[in-house]
Length: 402
Image (cartoon, rainbow, N blue to C red; front, side, top):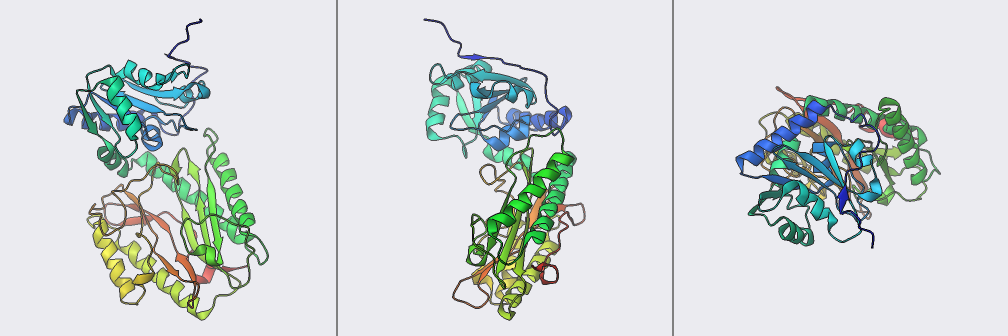
């Protein structure tokens, strides 16, 4: 029987130009290694898409297979499946090992080749499954394990100048998609047709602006009528009618980085009851943006907007928190849960954080003004306030269209 390898290095071709410089990735790794040293951790095994992308630049496509980034005091090595060939090495900062599927658990054997056994090993408790945690213990035989979820999330919450520059570009591309959607809105057009117009415009702009990138995952949620009641409702083939409430949601994805534009719109005209709710939500949006300053806590901001809505007898129509962080995330990976505008988050805003303001009110179908109302802007926290990097206008003056 021919002997087949458990792993190998397939460094095929030349390294690609990554979205960020080597110095940027080394600075991120230095931050992680500082946390490791402070906690006596010898090696970290990162398994999530967001952390692997954040520290190495490689955004994997799992398709049921596990991936990793192993970081020690001296090494940083991505672990990838053979189906990807040389692409993970070309698209990562650092080394790469390919594991084979000739026998089960070569993934963990590849990880062990970097970590060794009997070490203090860090892992992501919010991502590693119970099954894989058992295999970590069996193959690596750690003297101790430590959860690095919280520490890595806290690091990702503070954006570097290079990250803020990319997020700023993402916000601009989201606006491009918004204008394309506005142009496509007409009576008789389907939600899916409008969504495709916005997505196509953004993908073309990303390709123009980032010629060295990989292109994937950019999308649009465009909802109408009853379908606006949830923020994440899928697109349908519903045909737009005059007087419909609309939700415009554009999501350009650039090298794993998420940005968004979200706006309430109406087709042709807006009735009096709907206009009243819309204007109140816009007022809350503007009030909320004014609260996003250094020193304010997420909980304090949330409570103040709650009071704003309660004074107008609208708080009962709120369905989720008022904003969240940006960075390496998507609708299927990543979340900096420590930077969300909710009652149970005590994080204090600091310069270099990036956060949205996105109040939403949902009125049931059997009530006047039925539908979901949401505005969404992206704000960079500065030394003395914030900078709104979203350009597409909000409110009735611009968004009664078609």
